Structures are given as C-alpha cells and as structure tokens.
Length: 349
Image 1: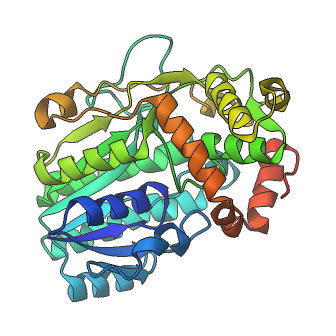
Image 2 (image 1 turned 60 degrees about the horizontal axis):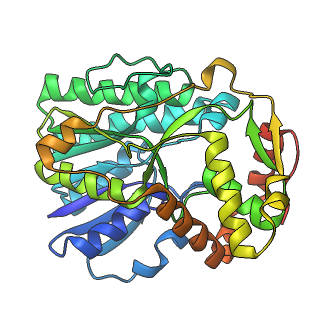
C-alpha cells in the first residue's frame, strides 16, 4: 500500500512516518510537506534514504502541484497531518490557518475524489469540541464549538471531509486526538517549551494560574492508533484518541521541573523558581478543559494507550537533553519574535 502522508515533517507526522516504516514493512510512504517553521527535514534525517520513503516539498493548497503528485504517485490512501496548529499563532493571524487547514484540505479532497483513493484519513483535534467544565467527556457525537481560529479551521476541515463523504462518496475517516507529547515537537508547545527553558535556566511562562486541564497522549500511542484506524476504521466515522491522563498545566510544569532537576543535578526548588505566571493572551479562546471519551476506538479496534505519563515525560525530557543540537538548529529569529509577542519577554540561547 502506498501512503501519501501530508505534513510528514511535522511533529506527529514525522513520528507517524517513522512508525510506519518500522512497523508496516509492506507500506510505502510519499511525504508531502511545505517545510514551514514547525516542519523540517531534520525530523526525518534518519529515514531520508529509506527505500520505502520519498519526500516531496510542496503546499497542500497548491492545486496544480497536488494534481501532479496524485497523477505521478497514484497513492492508495491519504493521511493528512498538514496543518497550522498553534492557538496563539492563530490569534495573532488566522490567515495561514484558513489557507492550509481549510483550502488545503479541500484541494486534497478533490484530488482524492478524482483519483479514487481507497481511504482519506483526516487528522483532527479535540479542540474542535470546545471547552468542558470540571466533569464530562466529549464523544464523537458531541457538537463542534471551536473557540479559537485554529480550532475553527480544523472544525471546518472536518465538516468538509464529512461533506465529501456524503456528497461524493470519498472514503473519509477522521481522528481527533488529545494533546500529544514526545520527541520532535517544536518548542512553542507547552512541554518542549518548558523542557528547553528549564534546561537553559530561563523563565517558565505559565498562563493564568496554570489551572487549565489537558489530556496527555504519548505521540507513539497516537501513531499506533492512527495506523489501526487506517487499516480497520469504518468509512465515514470519527475516532477519538485520548491518553486518559488529565493534568492541569501547572502540574505538568512541576513534573518537568522535578525531572529536569534530577537530570541536571540541581535542587528542584531552583528549577521551580523559574515558573512565572503571566496574563493569558487567549482570553476566552483558551479552553478550560479537554477530555475525550475513547470507548469507540477501544471497543471497535482494540486500541488503548500504553505509555504511562510519567514514564513518557521522562523519556521526552531525556530525548530533548540528548538532542539539544536539533532543538537549536530548528529555531530561527521568527521564533524569538513570536515568543516576545506571546509572552511579553524574550528567550535566548
């Protein structure tokens, strides 16, 4: 089977490509990626000459390029990871989110319809559901109530996928996962940002009082679930993928502080003193709590998360410690400017 993986140089995409090449010896991967700030070739340096892997640089919103690629490669399935994916960036400027997350998905769906792919797997997010209070879980039937331009663009893409399934019979399946963490995540997201700053002895900026609740999922567990949905998921269906591990943001930050303190052999109080509470620029767009009901994928496909959060977090800290050159190589001046705009301060090497 030949997979067209879009956004395969990003965080989850690169982990998925690596997982497929290791665990599915009968699958080939063509990776289409625009190589924006969060997607780079360094994420897949170890597989770039793999005989079942091919990289193509390009934008999923470029209809001519996508048409040419489908005609040339004739993929059996499409797995669409390509997306602008940071809430803070979407609040600063929503334009690229609409271009990639909505228009780009429409371009891919049109090509999938024309070339009659066997499956179109749209990688979505739990943020399309909006925010929960202290109790309850989002099932796949929950209404879509996005609260940020990023979440709205992903919800729009999900609805486009549904429409192409209903109107044209494109064999669409959608996955919506909770917060992923693990190797190769760009250090603008909570966990890699806190790891990097803690290792550098820089401030650890936490929005509000850090009481927001997220469900954490180790990225390889998500990749395993996505592969299962690709193979066995029912066409036209949505599958929630969650880690079943709810943590307040401040709790996650404190865990990182303890692990880093242990690794660098410093008193934990020294690392904890770096925490700085800052006003939340997201306002009401910063959802209080996400939590997913994942019984559907568990009962239908037999999937469940396997990596304990503390174990996964420690292995993630260890990875970033061993790969500090990778981290610094992907950071540009644009990152520092974004950091200043969001956190009102600067972070340096």
